[in-house]
Image 1 (cartoon, rainbow, N blue to C red):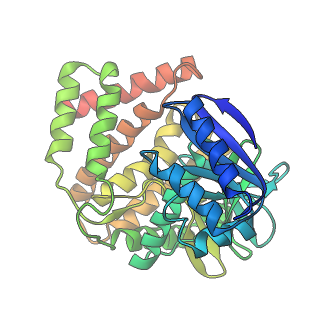
Image 2: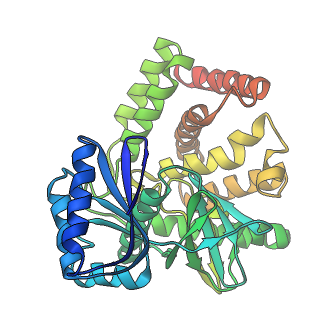
Length: 382
C-alpha cells in the first residue's frame, strides 16, 4: 500500500487483491496508519484494486466504524463496484466508481446554467460540465432532483453517466438530435411567435406541478438571502421596503425551475425537456419569470450586445421573447393586472441581477448596472 496526505486527508492506495489470504495483514497496516494520523480523515483510492472478498470488506467496515462519517473509496472499477453494490456496502461507505475521462475541446456549447456549461458531444449525447470543486455532490443532487421532477410530471432528461473532464466532472445525457429552444429562435426567426408560445406552455407546465410543502427549498427564502447579500448596495430604507415586499409574498408549493432561459430547454424530436435541474425550488411563478426578465432584459439594458454574445440574438428578439412570454402566460387578465405583475417580476429580476454582478470583473459596466437598477428600485419603493 502507498499513502498520500493532502488538506488533512490521508489517502490509502489499495492494489491487487484483498482476500482471506492477506486481509489480516492489510488490516494491521491500515490500523497502523490510522494510529499514526490521529484525528485525520481516512480515504481510499481503489484504482489499482482488482478484487476484494468478504474478508477485505470486513476490514473496511472496521475502518468505517472507527470514523464518524462514511469513508470515501474512490476510483473503483466496474467489477469491484459490483462487489460493493451486491453486498450492500455502497449503502455503508461512500463508494465512487472510476470515471472515464473525456474532452470537450472543440465541442459546441449549447447551454449555460447556474453551475455549469452544456456541450454537445455528438448527435445523440450532451454533457453538462460543472465548474465547482463540489461537482460530484452537485451532480448527485441534480440527478436526485431530476428524478423527482420526472416522477412529478415535468419533462426532464436524466443523466445516464458521470465522466471526468479535466479536473472536474460532468453528467452525460442522451438527447437524440436535440436542439435548444434558443437554436430554434436563431434558425427560424420567422417562426418566433410559435416557438415563444411552446416555450410558455412548458413554463406553465412546470408551474402547474405542486409538491408537498418542504419537498424543495422555498424560492421566497432563497430571495430573502439574496436580498441580505445585496444589503451593502442599498440604503437601509430601500432594504427594509424590499424586505417588506418579499415578506408579503405568500409561500407556494408549485415547482420553480430557477433558470428557465431558452438554452436550458431542449427539443428532442417533438418533446421539450429541461436539462438544468439544480436550481429547483417551490414558490410563485413570478420567481421564474423574474429569472427570464434577468436573462433577456436586465443583462441587456446597459450592454445591448450581451444577448448577441450569450444567445446569438439581437435586443429586439430578446424583448420579443420576454414580453411574448408575459402575454402568453397571462392571457385574459387586464392590462392593469399585468402591469402590477410585471413590476413584481422586475423587482425579483433586479434582486437577482444585483446578487450576480461582479464589479471586480467589469468595473465600469457593473457600476452603471448597479446605479440604474437601484434607481428603478427607488422609484418603486421610495
